[in-house]
Image 1 (spheres, rainbow, N blue to C red):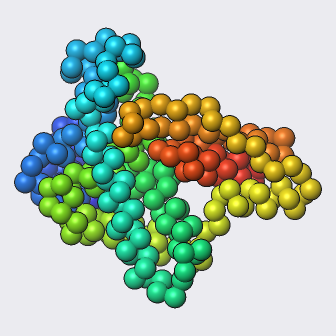
Image 2 (image 1 turned 90 degrees about the vertical axis):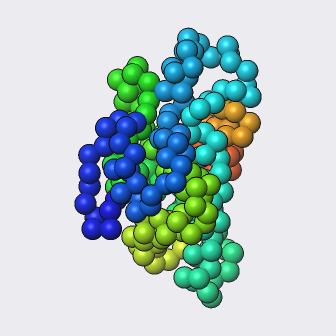
Image 3 (image 1 turned 120 degrees about the horizontal axis):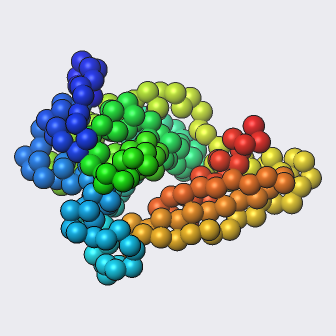
Length: 249
């Protein structure tokens, strides 16, 4: 994403300069950007992995991929978004700021930003994963955006990361005229208004390394089900509630 808004083609996992142009930032350590664009499947493939899980110690799974940068990028985004919201909405309290923040750092927003940046072309993934369409998976794209933020922070500090966030999220924050309602709250209100039992949440899967866990949560309400995935149980429950709300209209 250049200052002029033009889009350049990027070879998968390749043209770092084109990604830098979209970010409006030149890395001193381009290895950080390359790491941010490396999916764990590509890192595993290069390390000679057989593709069978469980062979590699848990502490080493994902080594060489963007998972560590995603870990710090998630925290950088959270801080910068909280800072921005305090500036933009000086009269709002935590009850309104919290839902705004949760929405703006959510997977759908991150994936949409990745699409705007055309990150699909830049991600380095294993051949079999590329054929399976992993570059189009929303969670993979969202993780890459967070990893890039982590890389920018480690390379140049908060200021370049702040500039990127305020440019890339500008439309999303402008569109947020009112604080969005938390999906779990909205779902609970929906069932109560119809005299139905409260939503039931179940943990389907807990996966990933300790520094970057992945929770998959299912929710059932009103005779229908939804599912969500995130890096924390609370966020996965919120994603599941949002998925179910979309299903019930």
